[in-house]
Length: 179
Image 1 (spheres, rainbow, N blue to C red):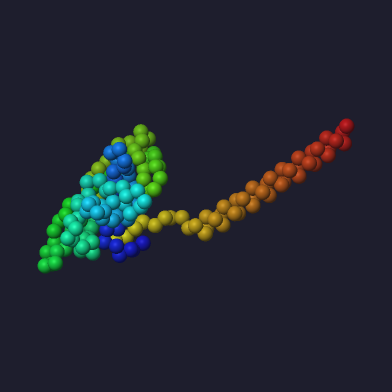
Image 2: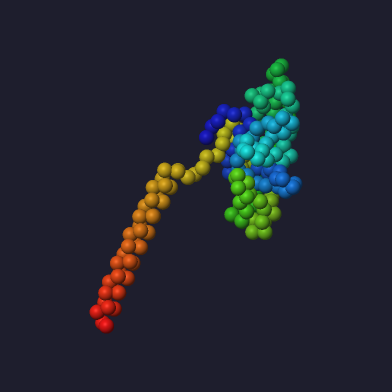
């Protein structure tokens, strides 16, 4: 989904952004809704504000609308005179088995033995996807469709439960006739 926000970024293909967790641990996320905190650091725009690892600092005198992200993860600031300043570049990581990552909540995952070691590289290299600026990844789940499926499953369960109950009552009647 295109947002038009200059600090939003989506990974098209494999890969995760690296964020710093409390205690110095590293977390991994595909959420790319970044904002600048009061220190000029890029953080996730959630309640926790996890800092993007190895991200450049955006000076206060640079308006956010003058900052852009390239497909390879470079942050570029356009100055008032039209010149561009390279602020820095982030790296992405991928895992041999991303299904083995441990979900910590808030779209943050941590490494486990099952996921393997992180493979770190620039976006677009070493099997990693590229970055799509001013765009966020949407959920692949449609809430309405999932709720309808949940209700249908619940109704089937109720029907099966009533069938088993009726069969049990019939068996009790048969058992009572034999006495």
